[in-house]
Amino acid sequence: MHLAALLGLVGLSQSLSADDTHFHSNLNYHSPSCRHDSLGINIPLVSRRTLKRGAVPYTPDQLNFTHGVASGDPYHNSVILWTRIAPSTASDTSNTTVQGSVDLYNHDTEKYIQADPNPICVDWKIWPLNNNSSSALTSQGKAYTTSDIDYTIKIEATNLSPFTSYNYQFTICNSQKSSPVGKTKTAPSPDSDDISSISLAVFSCSNFPNGYFNAYGNAARKNQHDYVIHLGDYIYENSGSGERAPLPRKIIFTLHDYRTRHGQYRTDPDLQLLSASSAWFPTWDDHEIANNGYRDGFSALNNTEASFREGGRLVSVDQRKMNAVRAYFEWMPIRQVDLDDNLRIWRYFKLGKLIDLIILDTRNYDRSITSLGWNDGYIDLIKEEANRSLMGPRQEKWFYKTLVQSKERGAKWRVVGSQVVFAGNTMGGGGRDNWGGYLANRNRTLRVLGENGVRNTVFLAGDSHQNWVSDVPALGNSGYNSTTGAGSIAVEFAGTAVSSSGTAGPISSANNNARTQVNNNHVLQWQEGYYRGYFLLTAGKDKVDAQFFGSPSVATRNSWDLPLANFTVMSGENKLARPVAGGRVEAGALRGGNVVGTNLTRNTETGQWSVVGFPKMYI
Image (cartoon, rainbow, N blue to C red; front, side, top):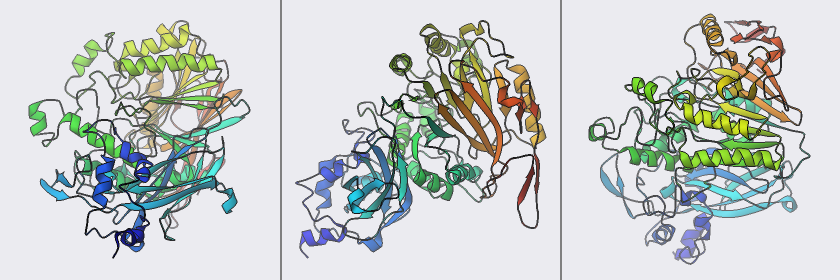
């Protein structure tokens, strides 16, 4: 058969060696960095390999869209679209190195294996929501993928309209085989001042073996948000057991390990539902790579020969980090904003004049040493040292500059996505592995806010698997009054986990613990650790509202969703509005308010829950 006809089986009828455009349009060929020999894919080499004589390309019936669709990082005129098209749900075992080499080394089998020579061609299109006519088609294109990037597709759809909802879909070239239809939304124009409100659904800590991702599905079904923010621990690197045992069933180290783990998480139907229905702003915490990471290692893999040989299973700290980073960029709908800086995930989005969204990396970028399980005494001694940084000097400088620029451009609200709890030194992790272990960095942040008059700042956090809502007093807590909120210069909403464990024991124990936390932290206004869930942050011109929701169980896949507490921040006040939460929450402990409690019962025959005192359950 003539080569052109052979390649036509999957729509590759043009000469790849003469035109690599459709490889370049797949952004995953450029991640983590196409500018460094050891960090990227050699596209010309991949292109030449696909023309190897004797290669038999896949037919459409041999391929499937294995993990749904996703979108993310919207600008006012473009958005990232993602999918995976492959001959198998399993990640390709040949590609455990980089550069598109014909002979690739598989670290799992310790053998060289020939790379899959077959490229797969996909057409994509995006059009205004609920308008399927061909005349309404806004943007379309073509992209190739191969085993080199685990058969993932990530493209930037451009020439879009601001703050507009779109449908999108991928189709195998020259076929009728298509992905599910996804929904996404562009950001408002940076200078737009006519947006009345924007809602963000905020998540963190989705541990697959620990339970079902009900929170994702609940938010998707309610459809009350414009965008999703995921503050990290989207996957976990550790081992586990049970009905949802992780794959591979071990602590992960290699590129294939991390790809396999990402793939397993994307089999969850509620994760697929929320990914297909909303544009995400994702960032990582530590578990996307390894627990308690810092610039030179992790809690369970130190940068020593003994650790390399034993705990690291002959994988170095740097190699493990690069494996995790590469898999993350392949599997997430995220932009890489600096190809010369392969670890950079911190970035900035202007959502009209209403919200400036500042996404930080307080875990992996250039963090000074943290708690590693055996050095807590040392961390306590050095936590106030001026040279310690939670994010590294380059990111710090960018963060402070961005806060001031945001104020100067007239953005109404600054929403800061920080993985770990900011407001109190001892909240959410004992004060060593969060901002409390980097007090000079925290004080520098407070100083920038105070001295530059940066107001209407809202910190977001995850990581701790519990809910924490706090005022953020000025540097030194000067003049702060926990009853009135006077002296506060910002607020923080820290959310619980999608499925990772919270406070152990029954709800009564969790509520007792919450009361202790509120009593011991004068900035803390509400604490709750029993429920798994998320919160909805809605910013308007006059106020920000935060609504917290909790699932009573992640042991089964269900749509039980309870409203737990509502909070308001009025523009210009820089504190939680009083009475906090209207003086009433449904669980946890509220400073100066009432905990109504949950009269929650389950019918053992039907399995249905009934609730007294709640306005509505989403079932």
